[in-house]
Each structure stands twice: as structure tokens, then as C-alpha cells.
Image (cartoon, rainbow, N blue to C red):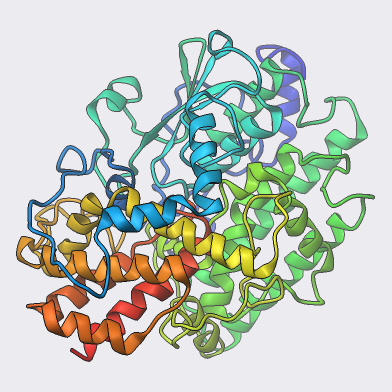
Length: 540
């Protein structure tokens, strides 16, 4: 790329579809759904382009990790109570002792130690990434959303990982699920995310950030030379991506009845056909060919990942595992072989909860009822026994989210259960307090994400009951065995308020987010085993 301030750069940037100036509303009559429209702007820094914030489920991250999200309460305190003693399930110390013998626990503890030094694989909990260099080589700090689901943050995060640029990470809540901390607003008064701090300078606009990073750190280039045919192809593909984005908005966020609905489906599907065709024009899985994804691929994946979830949930349209889009499936599969992507990848349920706060309400049709019920668990799909993890499922389940780690199907299932058990065991006190909000008082200040309530007050009286229920959940996760009658009998003997406890367990279940809290295989198991407790409490 030519120097950022040169005339050639400005001319090149002008060729990009609408650059990254605020696009006009892609769906008429839906004000405020303005989005960045192309690849780069003319090198603007600390811009204040208006953009809606990506919504998330809640500030459960504080409970799971014992840290503050800035939403309220100043951290993740615990409730003081005397745990219920039960002969049917051990205390937390005994559960932790059992967990410590798990190969999954040992592997994840070793990975956590590496993360603390800036090494190891990509992970949502990383605070420092060095890629074999020293901390003195770090010139970049990435400010991204705390929950890890903003598409604009995701693409910048991916680029940093793929180019192996040393960087630090600071996490900031989005306004739809928490308050911006004052220290961040002093740096970025607009509060926009993502932001990078490069050599002390704050830079916003995700695609501007990506271009500046690619130019400043030329190793592992993510775009072709500006005078090459491949560069022209990149621009054409970015124009197509904007068409696809517009067709998706028209389909998903506008009521579709009669011929208007059919036309929106046709427009989206035809545009996706052209995307699939473009992916088939290169030798490999990537839009521009080569051995690794380019900025073009990263621009697409951050929204196509969300399209796969949303058009299935609200319109009954399947993008994965369908004969219509073979090149798209190969492209998804290639991304899913990369740890950089798997660290950022969410699941369908998380997306259908975080998309409306970003883009506005979505509209369902009759064709969506069956897949929607499977995605959100209302059809019993979150219950035990779970079907085996399968790449051909309605929502593909990669048995283990760590690329290159080989294990049998049984071992992968155990690893997923033990990942969830480790997360709960390591922070059971804060998680109990968090879940007790379900039976407590809603916060006075509310946020756009429907499940976000960081100022809620927990029902302290139900903490001992809830703690017992969660110990049963961890015990079942560790063994993979569950005697529902025995669990019900023990809860019946000790729980004073079954209804408050059940509501609290459901509150926790519905707020498990991917990848913020755990991988999708682990979240899948965790939700199902939480439902084991829910079902037992219903019968008490």
C-alpha cells in the first residue's frame, strides 16, 4: 500500500464502495441502521462515525472470571452464606479435587499459564499476545467489547492474530449491556468500539484500523498490492459484500409479507449465490486465494457468521450444510481450522440474542418455527441426552474447538463437560451471586440487550439452595452420569424455595455466552446440565 497521506492512497480508497463513510440506511423506513460500507476511509483517525453498539446477553463475564465489566457493582462479589451439607453431592473442594485429575483441566490450566505470559493459542481471555516477541515490542492495544461478539471488533481481532502483531487487549462494555468506564471515555469520548492505540495514537473505524495495521506491519500481508488485478478483485468483492449485507437487512429486519417477503428471500439467496460463485473462482477456500484469509475474508466472515444464525432462526433459511452453497461451506470449514477464528466464533443462540440490539427487531416467518425452537432450546434441544457433536447438524458442532487437537468423540464430549465444570468451579461464589439475580430485583437502570441487567439485586436468601443445585450440576458434568431421581430427592430434602432456585438456574442458563464464557461444545453441555437441575426443581 502507498503511504497513507499520498494522493495515490486517496484515489485508491475512493475506488472502494462508499469507502467507510456512514452508509445511508440500507433498509428504508428503519432509521439508525447505518453501517460502515466499504473497505477503507481516507485514513481518518479518532473518527466519530455514529454506529449502534452490538448487544450482548449480560455481564456474566464478571461472575465467571471474577472481574468487573464496568456495568455495575464494581466487580464480582460473592454472597456470604453457609453451604448446605449433603451426602448426595460433595462440597466445592471435593469437586475441585475430582476436576484436577481431568486431562482437560490440566490442559486448560497450562494454557492459562501461557496466556499470562502472552503465549499460547488465541483465546477470548487473552490480555497480551506476543507471538514469540518481547513485551517491549508491543505497539498496539486493542480495545474491544468485553463480551467478544461485536462484528467490527471481531475482524480487527482476527487480523491481529493472523498477522501475529504483538498487542495488548483491553475490554470495554457496549452501551447495550453496560456503562462505559470513565477511563475509556477519557481516551475515546465517543465510546465507539473497536479502537486501537498505535504508538500512543487512538484510531477508530474497524476497516481503517485494519488497513493501517496491514501497512504498519507489512509481514504476512492481508491485502494485495494496490496496482495488482487482485486488488481490483478485492474491491469488487467488497462491493458484493455490501450488496449481501443490504439484502440480509432487508430480509431480516423488515416485516416480510406476501410478495415483498418472497422478493427479499429471492434477493438474499441470489446474492449469496454470487458470493458462493466468487469463492469458487480461486484454487483454495479464500476469496483472494493464497494460504490464509485476507482482509476481504475477514470483512465477510464477521457478518456471514451472523447471517447463518439469523436467517435460519428468523426465516428458516439454511446456509450451512446445504448443497446450494458448497464453496461457502468449504470457506467456513477453512476458518474453523484456524485457532484465530475459533477464539472469536460464537454460537447461533448467542447471535440471535445479540443481533437485535445491534440492528433492531427481526421478523420471523412460519418456516422458521422448527429451527428456531432447536436453536433457543424451546423444543427440548437443550435437554439430556444431547445428540453427539456433528459437523452436519443444523448448527455444525465441531467436537473440540482447538484446531489440531485430536481426540475421540467420547473424549471430546468429556472435554466439553469438564471445560464447563472448570469454569463454574473456579468462580462458583460470584456465579451463584450472579444467578441469584433471577429471583431478585431488576436493576433500576436497564439496557438494550434483553437479558442484560447489571444493576439487578440478587435474592440472597436463595443462595444456599442455588449453591447446592450448582454443585449437583458440576458433579454430573464431571462424571457424565446423572440420576435425575436422586438429584430431585436431594433437592427436595434441602431446598427451601424450589421456585426461586429454579428461576435462578434458568437465569444463568439463558445467559451463557459463546465465546465469552466458554466454547460452544462446553456451552452446549452446560446448558443441558443446568436443565437437569431445572427439571428436578420443577418436580420438587
